[in-house]
Structure formats: C-alpha cells, structure tokens
Length: 144
Image (cartoon, rainbow, N blue to C red):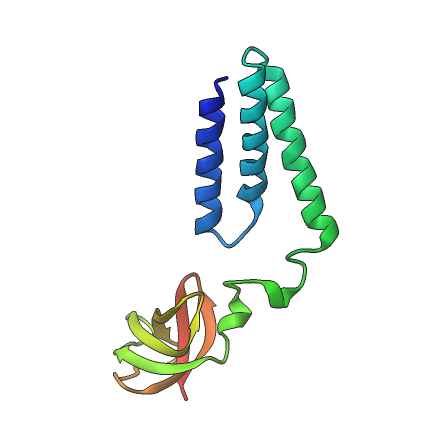
C-alpha cells in the first residue's frame, strides 16, 4: 500500500481523536504513521506494513493501560457525574416533554448553553435550575 494512503489514514484517525474525548484513535494514528514509514522504505511489503501498524497500536494501548491513564473517574471528560448539581438559568421555557435551553453557571465540556428538559413540571424562562441527570446530550433539570 502506498505510504500516502497510510498518511491519510493517520490524519483521519487524529481528526477522529480530536472530536472524541477518548484515546482509541490516537494509537491507530500512531500505528498508521509508522506503517507509512515502512511503506516509504518497503513499498511492496503490505504484510510488513500491517504488522508494524498493528504492533504500534498494541504497544500504545498497553502503555496507556499500564500507566493507568483514564482509570481515575475524576479524569473523565463529559461523564454524567460532571454535570450533576451544576446550577444555571433557563433560557427558553422547558417541560418534561418539551426541550428548551439552559445556560449553566460553569462551562462544562467547553459550553455553557445546553439543551434540557425538566424532570417534573414546566419551568419558565429566567428560572434558576439545577442539573439532576443527563440523558445523552440533554440535561434533566429541576428548579433550584
């Protein structure tokens, strides 16, 4: 396989890595970079390229796991626990069946504005709220 194809795969893996808060694509991208190097020097040996890509992916995953990166729940980004208890204000009215928008007092995962529904009853615009749950990307809130 051409080294250029391996480089395109590496770039795609790094783009995926930047959009997701995980590290699974990082090791694929690193493996693809090393496979591109092998393809540059040994363009006819696809098996060698695949082995090198696989080896570096596995080595990266083993190092990541041995070092314990991501094992501490406090290190997790975008987890449910991170949202619970955060206060904010309703920007557009919401109810249990109608999604609205809330503005949180703290920026979570880079944003203050989040889609939300109320846990029990309707909540008018401007009302103070508190996050009680997270359902996908939608916050479940209650009046403070």
